[in-house]
Length: 313
Image 1 (cartoon, helix red, strand yellow):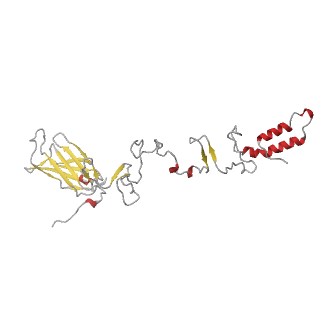
Image 2 (cartoon, rainbow, N blue to C red):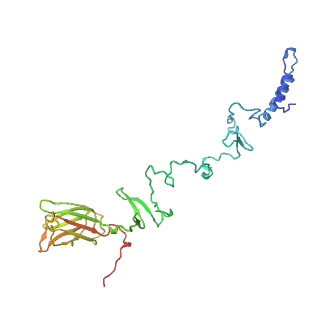
């Protein structure tokens, strides 16, 4: 009957029973018995726990899937896997690797050591962005709680108009470094223009102005489409009433009339404003060197919640 024997005992038995056969003393039983003992002892020798020092494996250990049933050929570990050469002078892994989708990020080591996430922008501002950042419908703010998906939009947001232009959305009050504040763009001019109508020179420049034309002694200013919500806007104008402006005395007392207003603010019906210079003598001037106009009012699509209205009693 075969017995389980340690490696040393097996070697001694083989040397004793299977000596040189010059005298014909090796029987079939001797061979059969030693081979049976060896086969029965293999598992205990391999699983002795001394494979690191006494019975080490010198080559890689490979376990292949069975080509017969396709299921066997696995390695079963009952207690754990020990890594003696780990940086911590020996670490035992008792749980299987859960797979990349089941590892908790906060369980990883060295999360805050050095700069391991170079694809992120650090909250301490130590590294700047290296590309554009799209925010979709979300807002940037101090609380970080509101976004474009809700009815509350606070902070700075961004959107693209129908022409593909980026628009900056601002809620609340804009506070500048000198503590000056601006809570609406209604306080800024919607359009302005300056033009020279002196003899031999007809030139103009302006903001949100499409054209300035002259008919007889009267001028007409045409604004870009979408600039004004309607024709109820404030118009401020000035003219020096003279064809020269080389000295501080080159101006006459005159009146600026801007009464005729037309248009619906669209591309096919732009807003227009008359600009008429009436001198003190009652003559309409068409040659003034300096003419200026500034427009304040509601822009197209502006919400009227900041506008106060009332009646005069």
